[in-house]
Picture 1 (cartoon, helix red, strand yellow):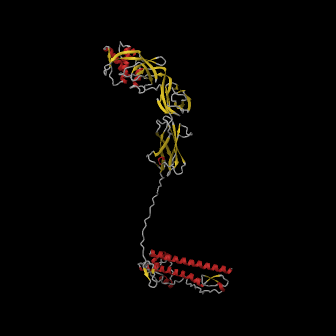
Picture 2 (cartoon, one colour):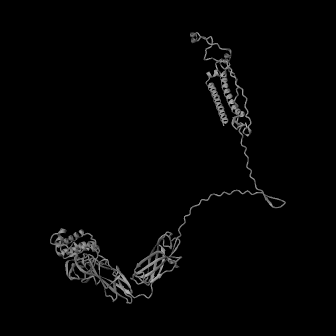
Picture 3 (cartoon, rainbow, N blue to C red):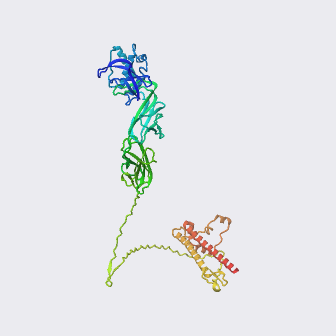
Length: 634
């Protein structure tokens, strides 16, 4: 607030008017305001239905409650008379002459009241003709139509809060400086000796006065031993006046004035009041109650959460800054954890409460945590606390952390089948009277497997006629008949049981038994092969051979004409009787083989088998002779 004087004698008057609401006659005026540097400024009325008053006013930056319609009011104060000259206002609104200064002041006031008193109808002019009244109304409407809302400028000068209280022996309040100038001056006025300002930014005492800039914060230090009292803090700075600054009458209810724009700096000042009382005889005390922020109970989730400790206090000095520090303690071991908290506050009354918050991380599952609190005066937590609450048995300041849940893996049990219990019969023996338990014997039934008789198929045996065929040329070769030579026993070296035996010199020789064992299979195979061949030939003759005799394909029969023979004149050689008989006695299978393919193939197979057997026998005899020769040479 800046004291100024309003002098109606220096006001520039407009036209008289009557309000339809009360019918009272009043006059429009552009007031002269005497500023602290003895300059004069201009101001219009804000309230259309409130009378003005001369004398002392306080200049406030936009007023404690502000101006109704303030954004548009500021535009009109800068864009009407006297900011814009009379003739220019008339030309802009399209109004011709005559248009006087009184007309311009009245039109500007009517435009301001349109925004500051929207519920009041436009006043009726008194003592003017209709033409003048029409021109004034047209200029006022032109300004109203062109008005735009302007952003409110920063306060010229402010010191907040305007009032606070505390107790002796403490730092009271937290005052904040705001000003549009580069710098200002903050001083303590009407204070007893020993009171000083404390810069909250640095924490240092700065005496009873100091230079300040916008945003600085201060408190008032009242030393112990003083009686109850009060003091004033005054902020002073050279700041320019701004359009819309409000002049408030010091004597009470009166017209408020809106200052017209004036950029010339002027010294302004604002004042705040601080009060203190004597130190209370009751010592400060605190009590706490801890709870889980999530659901307001005292059980915390196993993985942590936020714990709020509501600290109730009594006997504190209002306005004095205090600091609370807290730590969570293990309820079983009474050892401090790493979970701590801190909060500074300024109580408004001696008794009250404040919340301190702890953030509990994971890792405390299954434990009880107790909140311990200490209260300090000011921000220094290394000094002696003014109050302490540290009770590990206090349930009110204890929270319980849930156990960590155990995830159980479902186990599937195999079904258990009850086996029937067979009770063995008990047989009593008369001789001893002791029961004898006979074990039941489970007999396994014997299943007779079916015997499958395999049918034996007997191949038909065909008797083969052996025919002696004489050798061509009429020469008989006698086979030398040599009986088996038995080796001469020569001690233990000769056994005569295997294919090879040993003589008296232990040389290997072919034994009679071994030779028989080698010849018998060969002879049997030869007989079977020959019999198979004869059987095939006989079968072919029986099953439909068209020939009853053997035809000699190599020589034509006698008596038939042969061209080759006739030409040569040589007749066939005579055939002897044994030869003819031999020809007629040949087996029938040779004739069948000439006409039946199957018979010939089987006969050839038998011959091949016989050849292979004889060839094997020859190799066997050759090997025996070789071994005998090597044995004798040795």
